[in-house]
Amino acid sequence: MTDLVTAQFAQLISNIAVENMPTAATEQIRWRVLKALATILSADINPRETVPRTTIIGTSSGSPAALEATGYIQNQPVLSALSMGAMLEVRQPGAEVRSEFKAVDAAIIAAAWALVQACQGSGHVFMSALAAGYLATAVLADLPDIDCSRAWRAGAVSATVGAAVAAARASQLPATAMLDAMGFAAAQAAQLEHNAATAAQTSKNDAAGGACQEPPDLPGPGRAAMDGVLSAQMATLGGHCPPALIEQLQLAMSIVNLERALPDAWAAFQRNWPCTSIEAIQRFRKQVASVISDGEAETIIGLILHLEHTAPGELTTYVNERIGSRLNS
Image (cartoon, rainbow, N blue to C red; front, side):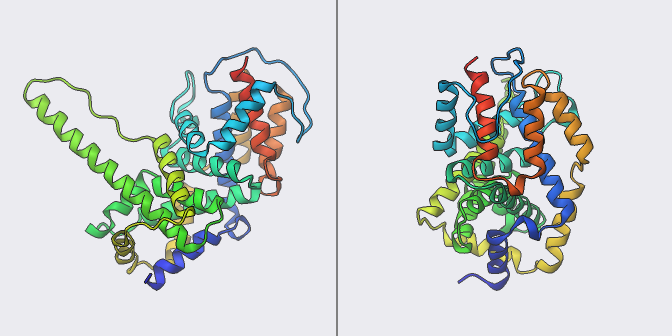
């Protein structure tokens, strides 16, 4: 039996909608998506000279191979989340430090993008999924530092739980299934954190014995996004996470005042790398100038400006065709 606070929290994030968010938070999500698209489109994959072309939104302009790649991505959400999260993590040559992506952004956006494609969700669903992922991450990361919260804090810090929440919201799962998805993700994140700590200790001991080893790699946002999508899929199929994990969350949430925690979470989100519309659009144009035409860039900017009103597949198809044409060039 879920306690009242945890049940309210799960209900809130499973039903969150972009129109019920603070306007400033909505705008920050919008610009983070634009930054993500700039990073993906400018990734160092088969660079080509920009060839001007005109495309009507909703029509196909890519080659058969590009369209085939788009279809593959849409039908493989787990691989889509992994690849997008990995691309967002890698710093591109010559990229400004401020244009780099944080792991939380990379994991949550990649997971939401993958499931929105797979479910043919609208821009409204996409933004709502991102809002759910960011809000859950902020609340869980601020849980009291007690034994029962360690798995959940690991899931929040790595963004694995946030990715699972975003994927579950994109799949429009009910609150009970949302909790299961979160539990699966927290368990996976806690295990990976334990593995990393064990590997680090082993490396330290080996170094003390004379062996020279590099520090172990920690799981990145690509893995977090993938695990988040898998967690949401398991919950969709009716899987239930271990009750002990939900009990741990309940204990940690028992002293949380949601009326204060939610505004505080949004305030913290808005303080984290704030960006104005002018800055975001200027950086996007600069970053993609060598890989897509000016017309294509303006089309994407227009879609982002009205993202919550875009039709299912409108943004994802347009962007995937640009990526597919580069892969095929």
